[in-house]
Amino acid sequence: MIHILNFPHPLNVSVQPTDVLYASLAPGGQSGTNHPSASVNTAPVAIGIVISINRTLNTVTYDDTTYTAVTLTNNHYIYFGKNKTANVSGIIGYFAETEYRNYTKVPAEIFATAMDYVENSK
Image (cartoon, rainbow, N blue to C red; front, top):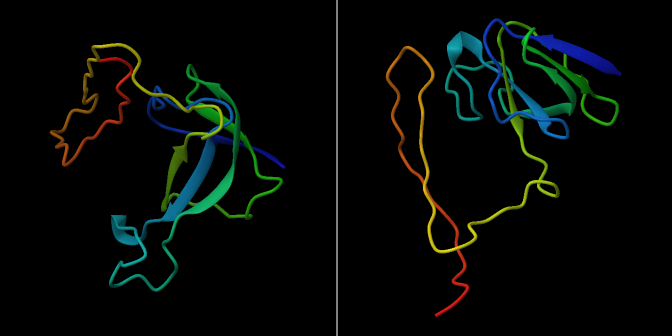
């Protein structure tokens, strides 16, 4: 079945068709399987494949035909994962540069970052 999610804020710049959408119930603003006071399962559940994105309207259209049916509420945290078949990449060449941006109005911290490389010449 095809569904449309409407978001009150701009969509992440990386979301694209073929990404897998996930939902986690976040009671009291918290989530995770180790949530100490959660009386329901807060583990992430794959809910569908992104079909299209409308960045003007901040909507994501997805298909849940082969995924677990979940009744989404305002207490669900929605996120996406990349299709590993279509988005395999690595650094090519001798130099790479990264830039981290925080587009929110609140401070944020990066706790870890990593990279993978293969030496292609000596």
